[in-house]
Image 1 (cartoon, one colour):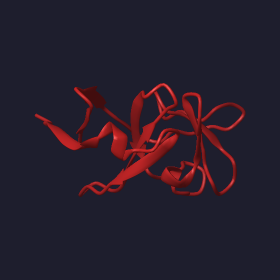
Image 2 (tube, helix red, strand yellow; image 1 turned 120 degrees about the vertical axis):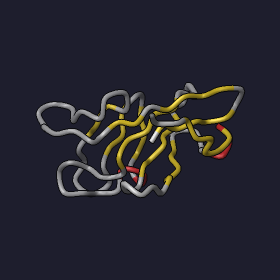
Image 3 (cartoon, rainbow, N blue to C red; image 1 turned 60 degrees about the vertical axis):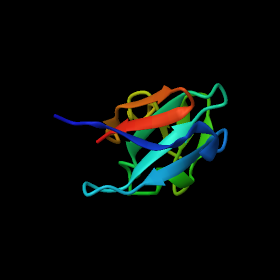
Image 4 (cartoon, rainbow, N blue to C red; image 1 turned 60 degrees about the horizontal axis):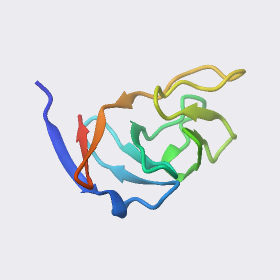
Length: 102
């Protein structure tokens, strides 16, 4: 069974920014929206592997810094007309602490 791991405080992730968590299964980008919602995706764009953690967060999406693909933070799905998906990881915010399930 996967366990929840405390990774940081919410304030450690800049608004409209991200933080990278290194795991044995690859890097995970943890994003913070302007409304303080948190999401976690594999830190790899499905298009050409760009680092999503370096992309621009807007609304509930992130734009890949390499070729401008937009992905939904809540599902990891690419926004049409692009197709593909970056794996999503369960994440939760509890008393100002961000927890990730790997």
